[in-house]
Length: 121
Image 1 (cartoon, rainbow, N blue to C red):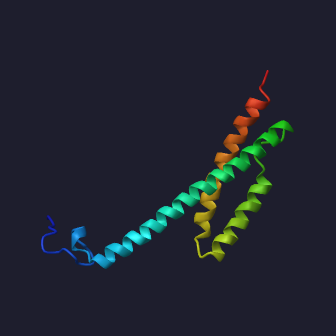
Image 2 (image 1 turned 90 degrees about the vertical axis):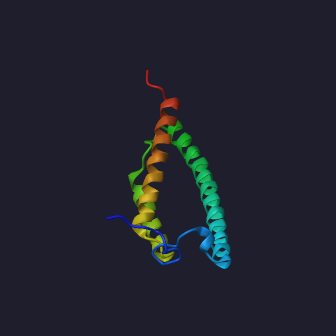
Image 3 (image 1 turned 30 degrees about the vertical axis):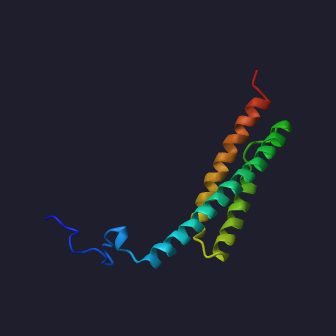
């Protein structure tokens, strides 16, 4: 069985060609996408700032031969972020996955810093 888009342009399940969309809808879509792009840029810049701070933590840990990971701190941060997510109507499981991913990257950086600071003989 084959399906055809012919004659279905503009229906809810098949919006058809973008030129079939009303100008007001296209304008609203563009406005929303511009906001999304701005938010994405802010997220990237905030992550860059966060990683600058965690790099400093990594150097401090390495200088004092502290372990790269701090499971107690990580658990506290995950719990805190889950609460923030709930308060912001964001799925706390998603927030936890995101922070867990970020923490893993931070630990990897801390391990590399420790190896470069305290090379094994």
